[in-house]
Amino acid sequence: SIERHPTPTLAPRGSPSPAMLSKAAFARSVGLRLAPPQQRRWQSAIVGTLQSKIKALADQKAPQFAALRKEHANVPIGEVNIGMCIGGARGVKCILSETSLLDPMEGIRYRGLTLEEVNERLPKAPGGKVGLPEASLWLLLTGEIPTDAEVKALNEELHKRSAIPEHVLKLIDDLPRDMHPMTQLSMGLLALQPTSKFGAAYRSGTLKKTEYWTAVLEDALFLVAQISPLSARIFRNVFF
Image 1 (spheres, rainbow, N blue to C red):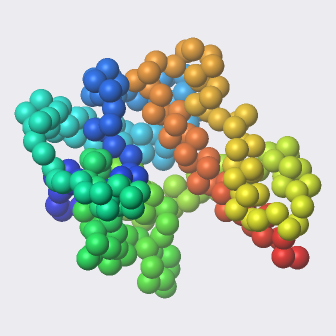
Image 2: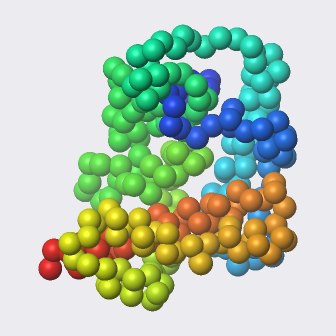
């Protein structure tokens, strides 16, 4: 795991933020729960490991966020001028983020590490010099550098989730070839909604709010797995 654990940093508008939660939502996040037993019975071992690590990190960070809200809620964090407003709130520090930070001098940081440090530490393909994307995803979700075995298992899990439903393929194949690829991608991703684990769990009313994140994680893993073959299908249709 990463040797240093930086304190929460303030990032410009656009990053997800525990600080933006309502008091009720934040209180629920402190009591984050793992997936219910019926869901854990069918999930893979690597997803179970991922869930456990995410929950452990949330349990570790929740007291820090609670203390920030309680002890420093009225501390000013910067100034806003007219130029910032006209520029779409560029440079306005208004969101608390740990996952990533865009520094104007150093560039992007993942979990407090520069991209150079991330690339140096992440597992790589045999003979490769660039950190694997699955390893980056693991780092962003857990705050830890994964082992080679964890990256291999996550890669295999994503491959198992990569199949695109027939109704989505039909939709993409029927679109005009001159439609912009990003428009097609947006339509394809939205068409995956009927397979959403969160959507199904929410509609069923059986999932507690403290367990919503487990279903959202499922959807996130499916989307990460499916976006590549979906993009490839669009590329083939448009350019060949």
